[in-house]
Length: 88
Image (tube, rainbow, N blue to C red):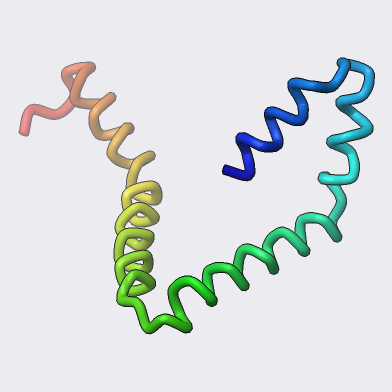
């Protein structure tokens, strides 16, 4: 939702005005504030309501992370197999 609002705002700007709109968003303070707001919203939505969703987030996040870590090795393995290297 926030991204849609951001792109709608950008759509209404002239090309010369875009850098002035985006530049403040690239500061360290803006990023820190955005992360803090996101964590506060997550805490209010999931932690304070005693929802089981954070457990699912950790489980699925761990699965995705392990997949991404193993991906380069899998790609090398598949590439090796395609070139007729290993006949297992």
